[in-house]
Image (cartoon, rainbow over all chains, first blue to last red; front, top):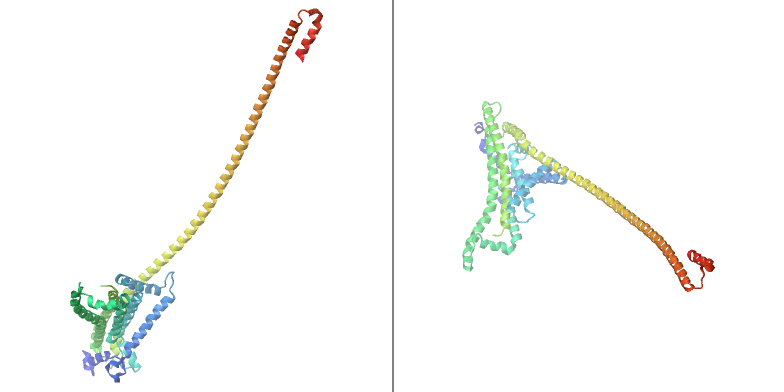
Length: 280
Length: 159
């Protein structure tokens, strides 16, 4: 591989690609701030809001335009899923699910852009590191998952009251009749519940993060095939063809993955919230 | 770090993906959107048409009801007129018949009266002559009193 001959080579290239644009590093690791993740999250959130606002402002009860029709298809899909899954009457769930799906999809979509394009452009402007896929940053996915976690509590308390919500921690999944049985099942119920509550945001965030991180890494590895070669070398054309082919195939396959992961994140949010609203 | 070649190939790959998406993914998506637009347009048109049809039908119904009411009024009018005519005719006929019967009865009465008077007069004349002749049988000389008797008889017959 031509890449291995250069200074630093592939390892440095990959390391470089996996380094966040970080500010405020002097106050400990926790306060280090991934500017790129936040930036792209905000930009894509604004894009999502702008798209939806444009569709909503020009929304007509008559024949819809193409944008409105597309948004309607998306909204109908999410709303249908919510109606099938969530049997409460919360007005929060469908907009939340749409926001999660659309935002996660947009953030995932950044993965499909040429992996060096935006970092290269940023490098021209003097920005050393840039990671464009916000969902390949555990901070982003965990942040969203923790938000969902609090929403689960919020909906649960809203539907069952504070007493009902916390009483459930001791009375489910094992049900018992009589005071002795209730005391005996309380401890295992609580244990299982604590594990469940802890696992939910972890699995939700790690699933998305893992998929996107791996996807990005594979893009980086594919890109590394022609690293530090030039058109003067014959081997460049061979590896270039391989890179081109692999890149196209992986990008096409990744369209499926980003959609699937966005759908899973949104779907699981609906499922968790509906479980929180349902009485055991 | 020199990534010029890598980036160019990435760009070409991205362009190829865009082409594939445009060729294979975009058309069905657009078709679905256009299908939806068409369906909505057709639904709205059908709704408008139905609204128009309904209004037309309602107008027609109102017209028919109005015509029927007019016709009914006309029929009632005719019927009452005809009834009045029939009553009038019946009255007329009855009056005429009554008049006829009355006249006939009167004529018969007059006739009968005349006949009775005639009969009575004859009987009275006969009785008078008889009475007179019986009363005066002896003294009356038919010859002497003939003129008197004739005069009496004549008076009775004519009077």
